[in-house]
Image 1 (cartoon, rainbow, N blue to C red):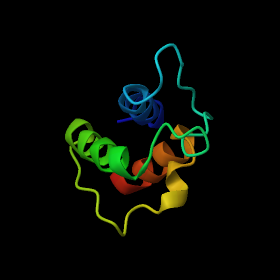
Image 2: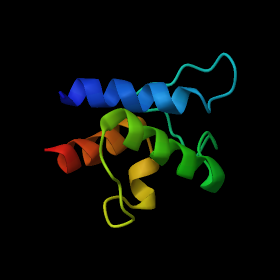
Image 3: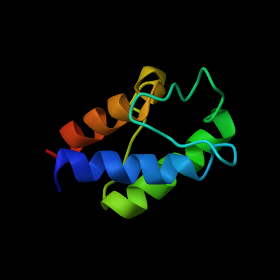
Length: 81
């Protein structure tokens, strides 16, 4: 899976948590805009695991990786790579 495909998957998953009418971009600040919070974070991870076919452990990601979709997809690409 290419980095662009991973980024598209991350943005697609996160889009489900964005307010209606908001378009998620790679640099949209997810935490600052409260698109992802501690409750939705678990659901986002579970959906990403399912779509990417990987298991994500607490050691794989830090809270900082959820700053935006670009950082999150970069971390996941390294995990997949």
